[in-house]
Length: 399
Image 1 (spheres, rainbow, N blue to C red):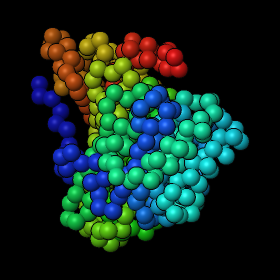
Image 2 (cartoon, rainbow, N blue to C red):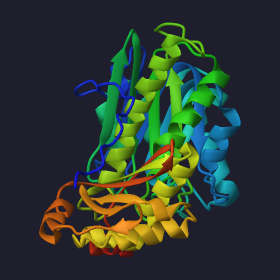
Image 3 (cartoon, rainbow, N blue to C red):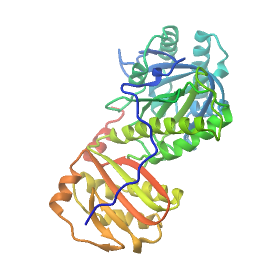
Image 4 (cartoon, rainbow, N blue to C red):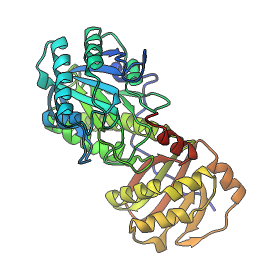
């Protein structure tokens, strides 16, 4: 029996070695403020002057920086200042004051208004910011804006094992970005920060709609452990040094494809780098409506039973059916399912399969779960297996 054939994604090729600073008109500064320990980069300033948009966590425990940023975007932006090692969340009024001071210090160094600076913080929750170290770190980063996007990608890491960077260029439109995220990852959004930039000239409200659309199809479709963060933020900046791009044009379609291609790569790399993870897992649902398919895909990748079965290389495809049912997915009597490339269900009925081959496929670095149901929708979600190392990492997070 032949496996299901995945539909082709509407993506563009990424630029080899591309990053945030690959886009014309950007500049980057980094510094070590001692938040994560001596000599580790933990502060970055990302400068791109023009309209910007942002999406932040839906958590009611949102950090001070998230509230600061969402009050100012979409709108004009000069730079983003970000620190890692401390989330400045659950820190009360002092956290609000420290967030303002971070923006103000950056603005003074760059010679602009405080309200033209977005702020992001990530790290431990409930610990006051060490402002005696943070402010000098910001001054150092904003004074020497000669670093690369790769340096900034390093500065924003917490428990990540690797940096996440990408860029794409097509028809005179460039998009670049960096991201961080490894644990406390769940849709809407994840424990993640994402910094994107384009040289396209785009009106702020259109930029916001574009970012929300792409985030819903990428960063909001990843999960590592089902926990939502207080601090996650994705910001899309512009430099205004490229072509004018308006909605409902061929250029708009290219910009959308380029942004999706960059965000898809960054989202997958976050899932791949999940705390304690051994393999990247993609769930593809064909059928239903697009939104229903995304909900179904996210329900499967969120399931601890699915994730542990994959970790154990156990072809227990019934876990997938259980997860689909828990999401109240309809038409399961017509379900077709491939588990790690192995056909296991056709038209609602189990089919014989080779357990040895399935175990071998589940041992690969990437595993695909492909669901087909009636309908024309397509939904994708990305995650990872769940291992004992995840427990160890988070049991020792503060120590």
